[in-house]
Length: 384
Image (cartoon, rainbow, N blue to C red; front, side):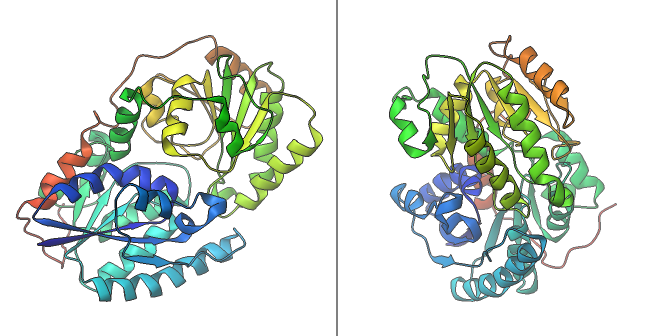
């Protein structure tokens, strides 16, 4: 039985790989191993351990390696601590393949541990281009990985240009789209006003139009994070519409964004605004499907928004270079430009759904490939 070990470092990681986990669990030839670390275990960032267990998965290791501070220093130290602890977990579990997700800083700990321990690596969503330190991490992970599962053709071409073996590059789509597709089709998931018990602020009327703000720090613009968030909040507050504000991820600079949100909440007396630290993915996707516009710099507007057809105003450099569809308007951190773009987007009910990041079947495709007899050489060579 082939042991596939998945390391989940955040709530977003889980939603990005759950469909693969579901498919692995169904295969008799495969055994799923799970390691949770970093922000995935902390309440303030949306602890998903109880959710994973509720979904029927066994967690083999829990690693508490996130150092408090949300600074450049603590991010680097958390990665180092993660490397030590993940190595110990790999030594105990002895996986045949490690499957890693995306491009966040905790991913580096996973891939370095696996590389030095001669464990073959499979990587989802490599080859994409964006405007943060994630860009560098993503390509570094690609160079350390043996099997590649990019989300679209353009990303696959980037991986090939990085010198990777074309026979180990599989354009499967984004597994997160699998989950989005399933949630959108599920008519039993109904949005109710009691969801506002999960956050703070005014209870909104979900029958009326609302915006969603989702903004994360750009690590290379660490000291600008607070002002950037202030600009976004000020711009949105000029529009007479209900607003949902989501808390940032755990990257360096998130404390500054959180500070800007708290300051806005205390000083701004406008009504019809609600703040969530975290949301179940099912609730988030249903809200995303209903919102008039997603505002901020989350890849969600570019990835899930593209599939659903949600209008998106993408602000700043965080998603620079990432493949996007017609649903996205890009602007700088300028109040007038942001407000103008939002007003334009809320006039559009929905864009036509595109499959830029897959058709919702990536999980099965990835599992089929992992189940096959793969000729993996731990010692890689460049393939130009």
